[in-house]
Amino acid sequence: MLDDHLKYKIAVTFLSGVGPIQAKKLIAYSGGAEAVFKESKKALLKIPGLGEKMVKSILQSDVLKLAEEEIRFMEQNDVKALFYLDKDYPRRLIHCEDNPVILYTKGNVDFNREKVISIIGTRKATISGKAFTEKLIEELVPHRPLIVSGLAYGIDITAHKAALKNNLQTIGILAHGLDSVYPAAHNNTAQKMMQNGGVASDYRHGGQIFNKQFAERNRIVAGLSDVTVVVESAEKGGSLITAELASGYNRDVFAVPGRVGDEYSVGCNKLIKANKAALIESVKDIEYIMNWQTDGNKIIQQTSLFQELNDQETVIVNILKEGPESVDLISIKAEFQMSKTTATLLNLEFKGVIKSLPGKIYQLI
Image (cartoon, rainbow, N blue to C red):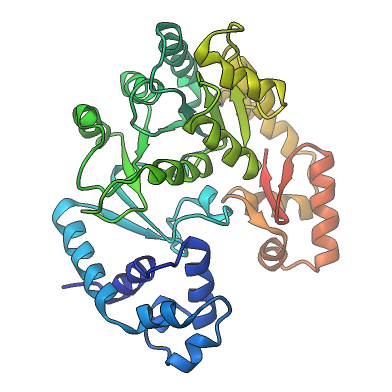
């Protein structure tokens, strides 16, 4: 039996001319995904940004039929759909304005692991670039991070394979539906990833693959992660787009420096020179900037630190253990007046316990 609630959520993403930002506004103004399709034409035309053409698309039933087809595909292929308001939606993506309304996933992956790192780079990776990727992932093992990449040739597939070899969860973000793997040569690796990771996409099955989709999917690679590492890149390329997106989401970006004149070091050197990425030579650079310790050291450090917190600070720290949160929701959950909330947050920042993100969002360090 088809899930009617899910049908409407998926159908919103099929509306012609409606991107993720517009779709979320549409859902908010209407009071829910189902309500979008039950609004009158007059009510829809009052929503900012909606024109006659878009309203006509909403009032037609074609997208609902497409959504039903998508659900049948999901049921037959063990695919899940995470709606942006669902409690199990990746928490790091929630705070990205252009995050997917629906994220299709397949496999066994924990998007909300304590540490998530994207490792990306050119499709034409050099031997030294691949070796650096393999060594970095081996060094990351004590942190047990989720490794994110794009399942492309070069650095991406090297990162996925190295994660599997070291028994780390890894997920590939695809630029097309989950009915196939592109490039097909990586299908066997993708199947192995299902046991300890998987694949994800915001595209429905059966659609054509356009070049622009590879750039669009990079926002998910960047948004899912605390850290993005660019191993090798030419002067222009998808990796630089991902790095820019990650920086825009206020995530930390690292780039591997290379020899002047080497084609696939130009992009990384450019990021470092422009102060858009920190230089990385080993995992120690990530550990230092991200304040990542191995589990044993972290427990000792946090136990000592939390003993110095007062009651109000402890309440807020416990709230932020569930993930980044806005100042408004922190105030509501803590049952503090806004003045007390902001003062306590400021104290926690001074103590180096939390950091602020764009949009008045706070997270633990």
